[in-house]
Length: 594
Image (cartoon, rainbow, N blue to C red; front, side):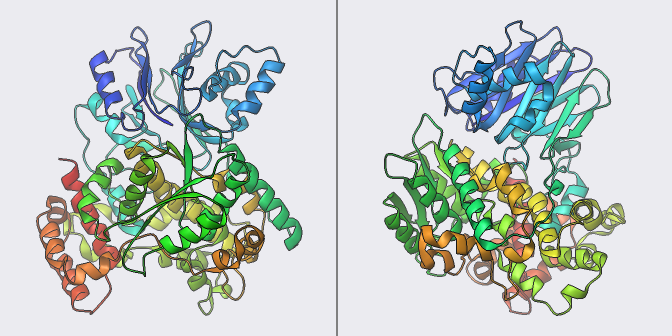
């Protein structure tokens, strides 16, 4: 796990070493153990790395450079099948000098070019400087576990694992992208490729970009989950394949030369992962959980039950439920607004884990792959949903997950902003392309596909990456092994959400022999805090002051509308928890950038 950064100048103009060091310093939390920069000033190119040493502690220094000096590679992430790939390369006579997965990328690229990405089972953002082609490649893993941002003004490309790595080379942040703000108010996060900053983009998952001296950028989608076709499984064969794939995905993600553990909530996802980990380790698995005094939000008792079942060394702490004092720190690490309050407890459990390990396995992805959220059961239980035409179904599901409706946004915006954003529809811009790709899936899988592409990569994977990296630990996600993702979308939606509304329908049945009925079928709890309740009482004054004192809120939005949401929420005339939380996150983010 690392942070990468660099630049490519089409005019061959060089950045200074001081700027490159500042870019590296901005990512030191992602890689506190080592730093490496390959800088060719004559060509106007550099690729750099800040390293969190996980595999081959002594030999994994980046960048890796080919024997002839023509190719240099850096990566952020891990290639979990690097052992098998290295053995294959050595059998073909290729010399590898280290046990590093990044050297495997270099050797594969030398032989196969950029098509080697399809051979990698991992989470990664990769930069390759290829002098032979006088080009630089940037590539991102299949579903976007690892981040990668770019800014290209036509003359110079800048890239980095976090937005803050770009600013030293830009002499400050760009202005706000109002289209990104528009989408933020729809989704509660900013979906890729947009970022909150004008001209800065997120490389799309499963995509590589090639930059040359020409202004045109070559882009290719090298993997798509939509290539799957649904099959009619019987439960027995499905369950066997499911558990076999998940166990192997978990086994591969135990490869590390440092202590590792797992986040454990006692839910079906994390309990299953920990149960599978316990089969493949010589020592008890270290597990981590935080608890709250309020039983509505406390999962620690269930986590302790799972830990006892698998003989884990369990680390649990009860913490204060009110973590709003951590919000500025959270948003500093995110670099842009996110309205999801669960980032705060995720940071807190990451801090607990970081005292003991450098790697954690998580259950992220299970809900999106196998319909684990209440919103799926609620939506598909609506009368008439099954009878909707395709366009009406897509719009109805989109509306069900939207934060502000188009009408609510129009009312919120001041006239100038309303005019600027007229005609920009978040559904058409950000959702419909994914729905079009998933049209051959059944309706449940269409909804899940949209969330895989938007919610997962835009918010839910940002959470373990940024909050883990904030304290220099690596989060690994067995459910997002590419084999598991493809398997999940070969199964019909009814295997995930039953006609009676049972979420993770076959998944839970398959996991029962491993984790037991109590853990498999306990009611799902959200890992969050009751911020909506606080906005009615103790934090009403804080909210009013935060929103009222925000330059962004006051410049862009109608004050009367913002105030009315607060008072209506406080007085019980409406529940505006999510809307107010998103506006507060925007205001707190604004303060965190100062």
